[in-house]
Length: 115
Image 1 (cartoon, rainbow, N blue to C red):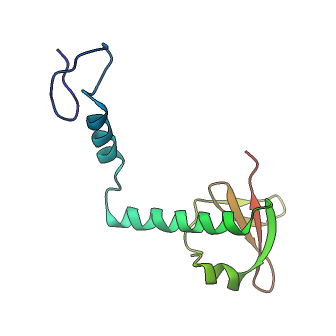
Image 2 (cartoon, rainbow, N blue to C red):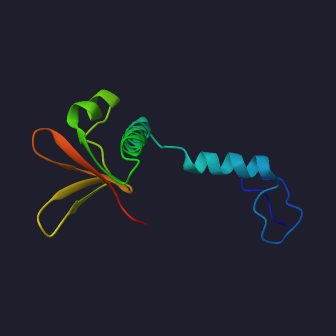
Image 3 (spheres, rainbow, N blue to C red):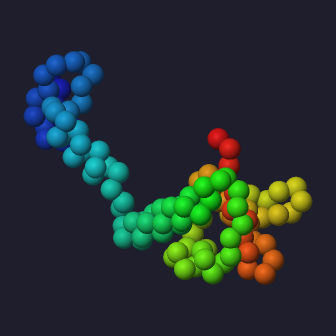
């Protein structure tokens, strides 16, 4: 007899069932996906905030914006998910599919990766 991964009650139903009900399945998955530490939670929150800011300011897929406007929105330049260097040597910092490249005079080019 199989038992629920969350509460150890007996499972009735399909052979491949892992939980006795939706409540146990949700509790189990929430616990598994919970950020392990405050550090992880804080970093993930900063990444999400930066991503939302880029999405808000770059609705066309490519735009130019001043550094002051990014900072005023709360953008933190220390947090990004990847770096891409083009053949020409231009460096783009990405937050998932939203990216930015530093231009001269505190301007930034915002871009969106085509998926």
